Length: 111
Length: 115
Image (cartoon, rainbow over all chains, first blue to last red; front, side):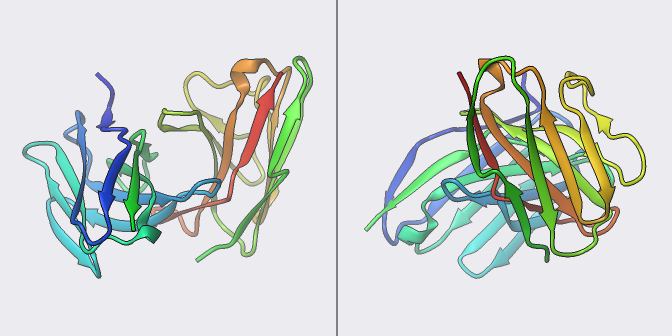
């Protein structure tokens, strides 16, 4: 079993839809959870960062962490064509440990 | 934040040759990392580039294959040595602005194809 699993997609949605992206993980020691967005031919950029369980909202983006289920989600409201990218979940045990990345989900938002 | 540049942005190389990738940051940073990103796979950490000492390699990566230099707090190089087609990948430089901070910034990547 891989440490972090993510549906690779591709996921295609119409503009304005609510998008749900998910990751599962096996290491219960993970405490820091991140979502990165990666446009084609660019490096990943940090979107959301959460510590432990709970929700965090930033504009159209909401990150959820359920440590009991070892499951994290990223919701995108009112999706835009500019949201078309690959979304990588990432996590680490402490802020000093290496970051473990999921393989990414490719998202296309169709105008 | 940090602005990171990488050179070259892409290259096509012959089997058995070596390529050195450069990473330049616009500010002094404590932590610099090198990742590999293969199609359909997770970002994989190759090594942590330590300023003034040898790099720390992850399991499955060795210094002879991926020698790394870190001469100062704004610059690092990764060499992919004796390349084979299996080394075809995107190589990414990443930095953390301070030890234990929560944000990693990534460079644009170097797309390497080995024939």
